[in-house]
Image (cartoon, rainbow, N blue to C red; front, top):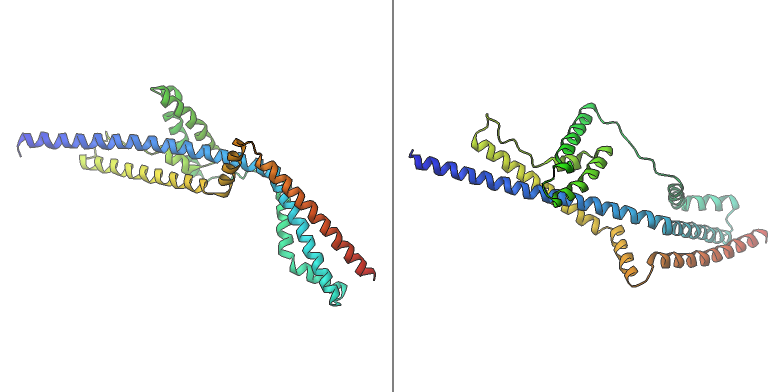
Length: 273
């Protein structure tokens, strides 16, 4: 083989390696930015859901309870007109609305109880893997190692995210952020093996970026995010959508309570007749 051919092959190998490293660096940055974006999006949706639950969900729960009682009394009155015995009436009512009653009771219990975080103890091997990932990422993304203000800002955003993932045992997020580091200087690897390792790392990063984008799209098409967008759009025009919705629900609850009171009155009158 001619020396010129050897030089040509080496040059092509170097160019391909440089291209792959550049692609990996760009894709790694994209994964970091998408990870930050999804974390921000989840935080915004969670904050909105808390606000929504505090202001609105209790009205829906109250309306469901009143409407369920109305259905129960309507059935009681219908069975009374059919001369069904008192004992059979209550048995039929309980049977017909058992599922609905259980659902309403479950919602009410969920409203009143404070969620308690579940911390499952990981097996030793997984706990060690989690710890290794955290140490690796904490070292990689330490803000002091940033080479420019933009990178420092991104690291400042990533470190709280990494801490959150570690505390919540979110191995998937830590593994995703750990992608992009390849060992090129292993003496036992051939040029072909090194290139294959770079290509595999790039494929992993591409998959991670695609998964993150899909998750962002899923969140943005979800009910909570869509309602959040509606509320924010209405706010720009001077309308407090949540307050308006709460007032509308209050009116419906008041009207339903009036109907329920009338049904209870009719029931008691028919009972004493």
